[in-house]
Image (cartoon, rainbow, N blue to C red; front, side, top):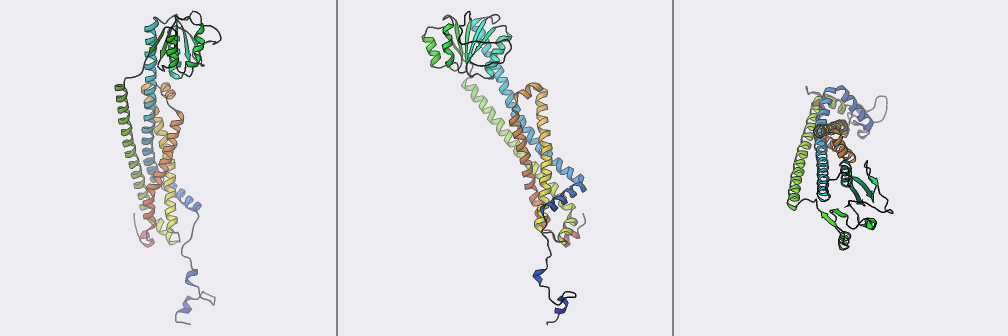
Length: 355
């Protein structure tokens, strides 16, 4: 036996302990890391609230920009639709005179909100409107029967996909004026060739106006991208700063865990779990706050009922989910550097540090 071997014998045993048989670190499951993170969050509630507020404010700003952009576009489209309806009704009145008491037949095979709005406006102005080709839920408008004739009609309005419905015009006096809004096709030309009194009215914007609108929309879109990029950078910076402060406050705790056998990977896992939890809760709160702020801001200006009816709920829900995913992802990315700093700490140095 070599000198010093007796000191390496196990107490009360007659064999040597191989160096490779001793384990100085333990592999702990993720559940333990999660419990440690939750306990740390409760213990340092003030620091946790600061981190949550940083995430929530960043995501709230992000969500308010996205939701505001969508609400603005929806309201602009609604405003443009209302203007189009007003122009169409004004053109119709210029063609057939005062609308009150006039008997108008509307052929709209595949109409939409604009066609429904025109019918509603005609009814409000006192016209007797009959609708053929589609169901329109407008009070005061009568559902016309295509199999019956249309006697005593003052005007026929063509909108949408009206071509399949032209056969029903056989019961309409040939002298009755037929007015078409957009969608001029061969069927309309055939009516003119038959000697009917047809009129094509256009409500489309000029090319210069369309170019100016497209340029303005592009500028708004690029401005939104810039604001979103800045908000994301601010969010990442705030989360990273909060996580670094969390690491600084827990020097002794980290040193103690590593002395007790915690692996560096366990420390990294613990901090990433904490950052993801902060990101999830903060993003959920911030996303809801940003959405409510955008709805309240535009609703206060344009009216809450009009704002809510103009927006697309599914699109807003998708934006909210996207902000939630982005917040969690950014929180995890921002927590990588603080986690690596904590994992590389020397236990002796961490225990000797006073913060």
